[in-house]
Image (tube, rainbow, N blue to C red; front, top):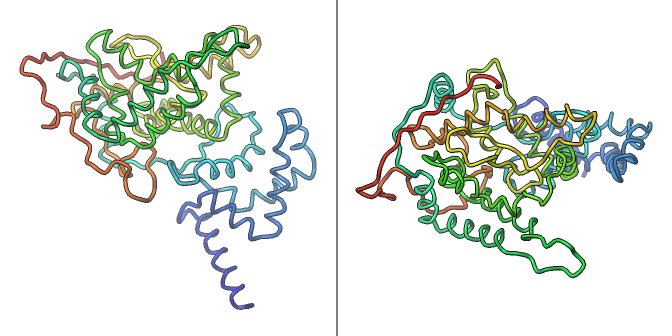
Amino acid sequence: MILIGVVCLLLVLGEYTSARLGLEPLDCVRASELCNQNSQCSSRYRIMRQCLSGGDKERSAMLASKECQGALEVLQDSPLYDCRCKRGMKKELQCLQNYWSIHMGLTEGEEFYETSPYEPIHFSEEFRHASIISGNATVCVWKPCNPCLDAAKACNLNETCKRLRSAYNSICSKTTPPQPSAGYQEPCSRKRCQKALRQFFERVSWELSYPLLFCSCPDQACAERRRRTIVPSCSHQERHKASCLELRRTCRSDALCRSRLADFHMNCQVTPHTVTTCPHDNYHGCLMSYVGLIGSDVTPNYSDSSPSNITMSLWCTCRGTGHQEHECEAFHRDFTHNTCLKNAIQSFGYSSEGGTLFVTEPSSTFLPPAGPPVIAKPAPSLHGNAIKPLDSACMFSTCANLQVSLD
């Protein structure tokens, strides 16, 4: 029995040491299991969870106590401190909650930008070069008159894409029954709509979902249909615009939304010293992080129906934020004036490859690490025989000047 115990201990220590040395990532679900196998770590972990319970004021007071600070000090040397989560993993929410049980105590909302709990997005060298080339030049390509229509046709040819797209459109377009006590009737069930949107983008291959979001448009009518792809009237638009800071606070109170927002900031934060203004010149990482926000309390979308001047924004305002107006504007500008995001969208929509992205990970939006792909059938090509344009189809020239810095 003693020998078995020693062997188990060595295995646990070996797994933890490998993770700390960066040999292999340790997800936060497994890190929690390892912590629970150690009496000191386990007891401090329970204390830390109690420290983070309650409202903001109570939490701040608790975290300042010696007991909470002592627990946090021990946990910073535990497997939980360096753990990360995989996008689309089976226990993603549990993993993220475990991550924030440590890191929320370290930051407590004081940091404007937070570190993403997700493992880094890997991309191939070919895609990096494609991003750099796109970032250095004006993209001018001849495309079919309506690539957005082609994207919709491609989705309809795939059973899973068609079913999940129809599902979220139906849920997001369904009005809620009037409530006698409510003076204002909600246009739909927002939570159900957001959940259906998340399911669509998590379960449908990005080769099919991204063209629906980021297709290039020849005119305003097309751009308006593109803007309505995620049914904004239900998915995120309220009757009155909330404060952007309140929107951020609401998001940060939820582990999933907080994680997606931190991931967006990490992968789309404007980086002046790179050619494309994206971190590591990684367009795909930015697009993935942007899509990850759809269906959350911080759901971004096109701000208008302009076919050429792409501007993304949140449904919020900075009016009435008083002395916090500067912070509010800075947060909102991460969407409205984000050249990395804008360049990534334009590079995808106006790419001569029809939006082809070179990635080294599996081809689902949040890239589950294991298991069979959700879509069994191969994605139909947007430019192959799966979709044949009409003989009379017209062509238009699309030119997009990729920006190199903030406006």
